[in-house]
Length: 83
Length: 363
Image 1 (cartoon, rainbow over the protein chains, first blue to last red):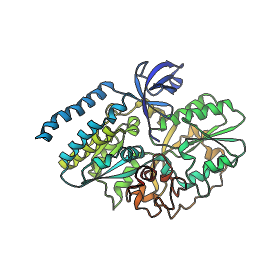
Image 2 (cartoon, helix red, strand yellow; image 1 turned 135 degrees about the vertical axis):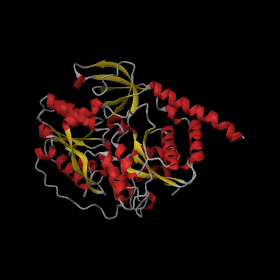
Image 3 (cartoon, chains in turn purple, yellow; image 1 turned 180 degrees about the vertical axis):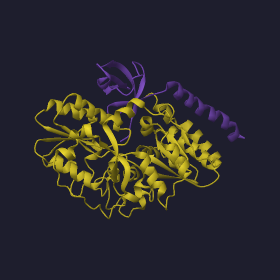
Image 4 (cartoon, chains in turn purple, cyan; image 1 turned 30 degrees about the vertical axis):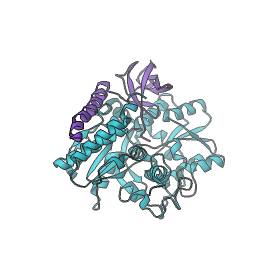
C-alpha cells in the first residue's frame, strides 16, 4: 500500500495549490499526478509518487552521496577481506 | 528506473551485508514495520544475506491487513446499495469479510470499481452526479495526503454525491502498542520510509527514548533495507537507542509540511480497531466536523454489527511479529492466496502472502 515510486516531472499545470498537477514520467510510463504537496518541485525534478500524489522530492545530491558511500564501503573492506 | 535500479545493485548489496556481518557480535531481533519492506526482504532474499544472529520479524505495516472484518462488512453493505458506485484500491477486493468479499459482491452485481488514487473516485463522482460514489479510504500516513486531497477537491467542487468509508491508520501508536506488550521481543525497528516522507521522524524520538529502542528510517530497495539493518545493528551493538534516517534522499526530519497541513485540515486522530490486535487509542484518522458530510457512515444508515474475527486465522500474532507466517497451522494448507482465511494472505504486502509467494517451497 505504501508503494511509492520516483518519477520525473515533465509538465506542471493547474490554477492553484489544490489543483496543481503535472505529467510525471516513470521510465516511459507517463501519469497525471497531483503536485500540491511538493510546491518546491518543478519540471525536471524527481518526485516520489503514491496513489496519484507526489509526497516528496528526491534529494538527488543525497542519492548520489549515498551511492558513493556504498562504493567506498566496498573499496575499504575489500583489502581486508582479501587479507 | 532512476533512483530505484541503482539501489538494487547486487554487488553493492553484498558489500553492505559484509559490513553487517562485521559489526554483529550478538543475536538481535529487528522488526521491519512496513509490508512493502517485508516483500522486498523475501523477494530479494535479503534475510538470507544476513548473519545468523540477526532475525527479522514482520510488523503491522499493511493497511489492508489491519482493516477489521467489521469494516469490510460495512464496505460490502455500502457496495450492495442501489445507486452506489463503490471505489476501492485493488488490494481490498479479495480481503474476506465475515461472509464474502468485494470481488464476489461485484460478481453478484454490485458496482465496485478499482481505483489507483482517491482523486480518481472524485472524478467518477463528478462525472456521475446521479450516483452515490463511496471511496474505501484505507492507508497509513503515506496515503492520507491523497485521501485528504480527495475530500478537499470534493468540497471545492461542491460534490454532494461523494463520501468515504474511512479506515485510515497511523504507525507510531501501533509501534507503541507492540513495544508495550509484556512479551515484546523487538529490539530495533526499521521504520517505514514512505510513511516518514510525509510525517517526518520527529514523532519517533520520544518512542526511541521511552522504550530504549533504536528506530532507523529505512527505504524499500535492497540496498536501503540492508543499510537500515546495518545502522540498527550498529546502534544495538554500541548500546544506543536513537532515531536515525537511512533514507535521506526521500525523508526529512520535519516531514512534508504541506502534506501534513493538508491531512490535519481534513482529519483528526481517533481510536481505531486493528484486525487481530484490537483497539488502539488515537491510532486512526477520522474526518473533522467541517467535512463530516463526506463520512459514509454518517450519510448512510448501516446495519453492520461488530463481528468476531476468525479463530483459525492467527493474523494478530503475525501482525505483531509474535509468530512468522509458516508457524500458523493453517499456512499453505487451509489458508492460501486462492482461499485466504485472513488479509495477510491476500494483500500484496501481507506477510503470509510474501512467504507463500517467495518461500513456499522452502518452509
